[in-house]
Amino acid sequence: MLYLHKQNAKIGNNKSRGGRLLIILSMSLTTRLARTVFMVRKGECMTKAVDFYHNGLGLSVLRHSDEWAELSCGRSFTLNLRAVTNESQLSVGYSPLISFEVSDMDTVIAKCVQMGAHLDGPIQYPAHGKVAAMRSPDGHMIGLYEPSV
Image 1 (cartoon, helix red, strand yellow):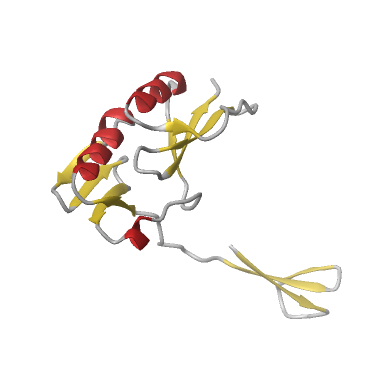
Image 2 (cartoon, helix red, strand yellow; image 1 turned 120 degrees about the horizontal axis):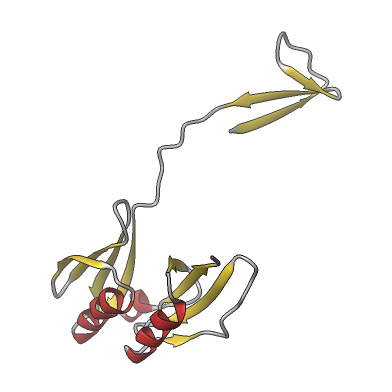
């Protein structure tokens, strides 16, 4: 919904609130996040990255070559890995952050740490569940979320 406000407007059957005209436009958004691409170092790092996201986080491997990999995170989203050699393409930081919902955070963290990942700070325990930030073996920041039961 898009809300437009206009001061002191008087137009037909539109909703007026306190001297303001509230025009409500309903917009159908067809944009959705379908994939994200992480850059990984060409060579052995591609194999390790695919192994981490497949065996550590349980994503399904759709395609895997020396240059490109696609992993499924459900029916409507894929995580893509692209092998690169240019150092500027390998810069990683705190953005983007992709968060994965897990059913057993302790088990997932233990498995991921064994595969070369590390926690970036302590696990948080807000009222809605557990939240953790983790660096993947290739340096990307990922989030883990386990909803409370």
